[in-house]
Image (cartoon, rainbow, N blue to C red; front, side, top):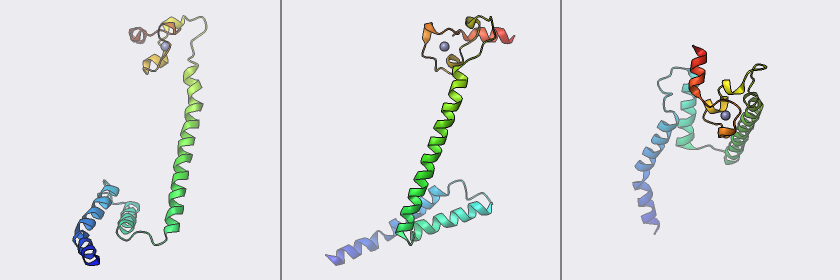
Length: 133
Ligand SMILES: [Zn+2]
């Protein structure tokens, strides 16, 4: 059976090569036309990585873990930011004595108001247009 296995490996070598080139193409898509040294370096790194793989599997695992951690961090950060900005929208301000019904609901404008008819703000978008005039 080893002979057959070898033949198979030899036959798929070209396909493998093509696959790798496709991966490189995908990873560097849109970067090749850029002249920045950073992009060129990135392309080189990706090309090397795909073609030869990284020498140290442990290092790969580590960098993958780091990448994931960073991604999670970013997600968390974004979530925190969202939490921070949410109250600003939630507390829609109206000038004192003004009728809330004369103010178009900020959520409704974004299509996010869940209060419907019970909302104290107006859901009449034509109102705003009238005010702008
Ligand atoms: Zn509303």
